[in-house]
Image 1 (spheres, rainbow, N blue to C red):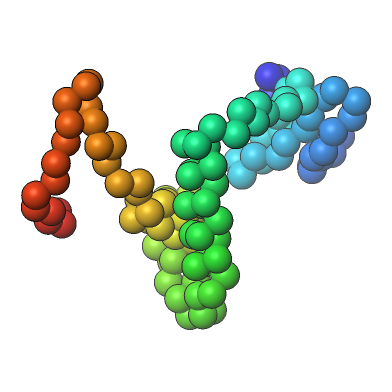
Image 2 (cartoon, one colour):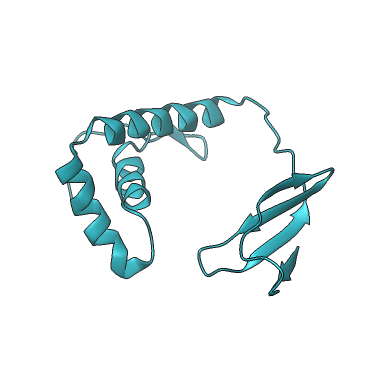
Length: 114
């Protein structure tokens, strides 16, 4: 990956052949080889995609006032309200614990919230 700082242009993004350009929030343009992500379609990956999809639906169903509250929370962090919401939502959407751990059977008899 290469970082580009130039006066020739203030914004560039997209792909040219196998090269990808990204403009970061700090104004730095990154140049890298175009990546094609792996898609093994494992059960864990599909579960994570379902959790993500559910959180996006929840974000889209929020009112403008609710979204603005997240934007205000996110500003000091240098993030968007969407990113803060998604982080919170994905933590809540955690998958249930496995039924076994290192070969030992797990039995949950009591739960509590921290």
